[in-house]
Length: 529
Image (cartoon, rainbow, N blue to C red; front, side, top):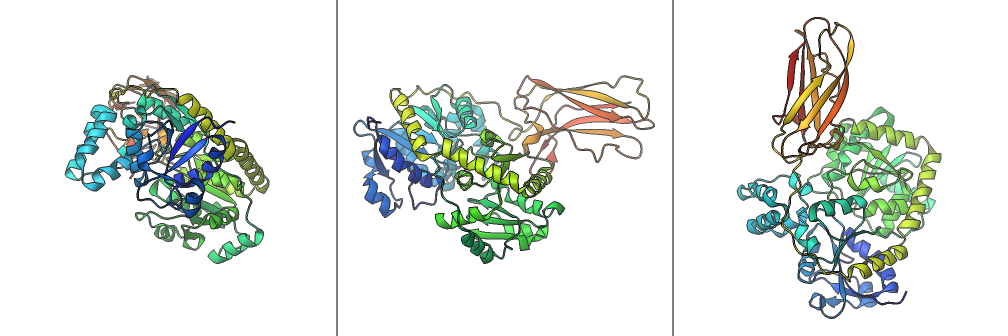
């Protein structure tokens, strides 16, 4: 391909400890073969001598000069503050590695004790909802929910000629939030590297005290609460997991205490934490794991480079059944539902896979094949250039006022609606079973989240009370089968057996929270039968 495209490549670069820096290092050599690349050195950030020798980076003041198209690599942490400023000042094409940028907004505003810019951007991007969310920080109150409910990327996205993302889910979120913007889905590049030797694997296991034949799970990357490593640790305590060890590779966030979690679960001797390691050590650790876990909830929409690196090593994975993970084929990754029963489902999936070496090998081969076919850096570089040639012809769209999506029950303070139950007609003979149809209609402002979505999900508490007890006290509460937007309805069917004697049925929705559940004043039904 003739090098007819000239770009300025703007990104954090190694040795910055950032997945996007690693992404850039993998992509740049192949991108340089198919277009004219000029690398930009972000102010105050280190850059490896090898990259300096290869690319002779220019300063940020050069961006926007001449015919070059800026290609920005955008993430959700402080390394990307200058990337954001440059992209707003000199529009180009933006690779949105994290679909949600709320953490970065906080870094730029509240973390520096600057409330007005926080309120201004939230209001610009999300209208009255954003303005309301910006009120509590005025009195020092914070919550995690807005970080994963309000993307705060509208102003940035709408200023660019086009957007590149790594998943179909991410593309849909951008369209939902920013309107009619040109978005292209480009896989993340990932080279296939050779597996570690048997001696390297044996030495790594020995260094952590992991028996050579013991089943080993691996969790890789920066460990934060959303990685749900605590769920994996608790799953280790289940009977079917008694022989399984867990190796955690990566920095651990300050708010986590994985060793304490393991002690409380009684599995401290089977948890092994290595901390941050080099790329070479990471390759050995991944080769040592029989199976890997990459759970996540909530999510900022990031595509996990550590997960793709696992696939490149021929290692299958178990992921959360959520968001961008829906793009992964079942041949390489099994999904664990969120919410009630997550630990049990995880333990069941892990134990079944570990007991089937042939299936593990087949999934590993499928994972490497997927990386070779879809994520080869040379193929990704060509796809990026093809997209840039299309998008370079476009002018940035005209900014549009925020038309906020409905809030969800993850962030909204009440649920309003109607609830009816069909099938309660008399006579209902004592001791007989009957199928009831519960119909829910959402009349409020918020979108009710489906029952499998964890925090914020809507479930129905159903009671059948006689004078001495609730006959459904130990029965799981059914959840909404789908998200329910304002004005929409859905039905849930349940099979109940009428107790002996007079009884009362009560049906009431609840919203799952971080600690159990909270009642938010929704519709309910109570009737003697």
